[in-house]
Amino acid sequence: MLAPIAYGLAVLLSLFVLFIGMRFLFQPRLAADGYGVRAKPDGDSAYLSVKGVRDACYGLLGLALLAFADANAAAWFMLVVALAPLGDTVIVLRNGGTRAAAFGIHFATALVVLLSAALLFAV
Image (cartoon, rainbow, N blue to C red; front, top):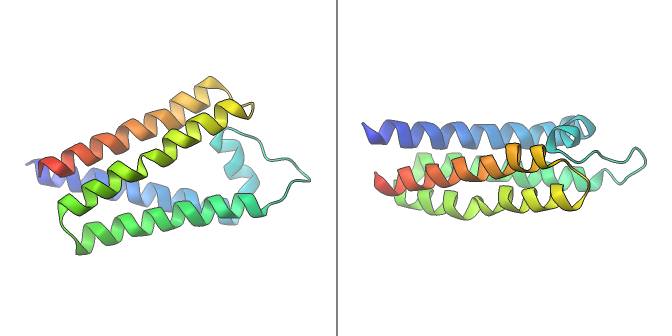
């Protein structure tokens, strides 16, 4: 019973991160607003693309591990990748974003990713 929940949550998280990455690649300004730090109109869009590539790769790697490796490998991946939304929390707070965005989006995401890791370790 635990395995479908563990794998289901991990797949959903990986697909969600892949979606966020693609959004940063195809709608960078809109994605930045959703991230919690508004992009400057005259700013370098390369940084938004970097975030998009990073997130898309995390999502694809998560899906690949879930498809081709065991739960333990996927759990370690989730444990390590939880550092990204924790770092995003700090970035939002240090760059004028709201506490609601920092904790409600990024910190909450980190907690869900850590939960996913724990469930995968338990399988």
